[in-house]
Every structure is written in C-alpha cells, then in structure tokens.
Image (cartoon, rainbow, N blue to C red; front, side):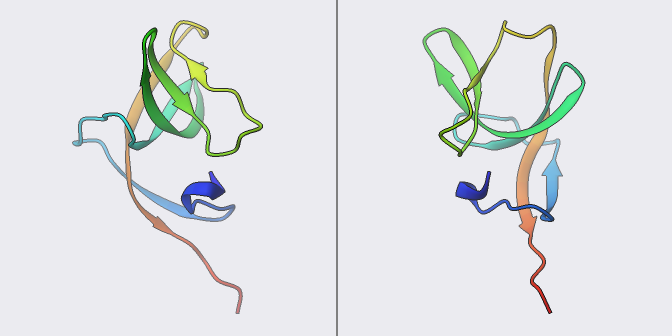
Length: 81
C-alpha cells in the first residue's frame, strides 16, 4: 500500500466506529489473515483493492470469510535517524 503512503514499519490507527465506504482504506481479515486494502464497489459487490498494480483485487465470495475490522484513519511512519 505504498501508493497510499503506507510503507513497511508504518503504524496504523484504525477506527471501528466509522462505517466503511468506497475509497476508504480498511483493515480486513481474509480467511483470518489481516490485510490493509482500499475498499471499492463493483457491479458484483465489494472488493478489496491494493495500491500495487501487481496484486489482484480480493472479491467478496472468493474466500470463505472476509471481515472488515475498521477504517484506517492515521498512518505514523518512522524515519531513519
């Protein structure tokens, strides 16, 4: 998700009180594995989309369980000293 400013080592603040909608970056669990993706709506339903063009979108129905945990509201990125 470096295209969205989220890089290795970033700390995320996730708000579970916000209702996720199109365009939000969300923390989701796909078959109990955490992922951070952008939420998009398509004709077939909701998709979790990566900012990296090399990763395919995760479509609802292609996995046993997809749960949206919350919406990413802040990203804290460390800088080298």
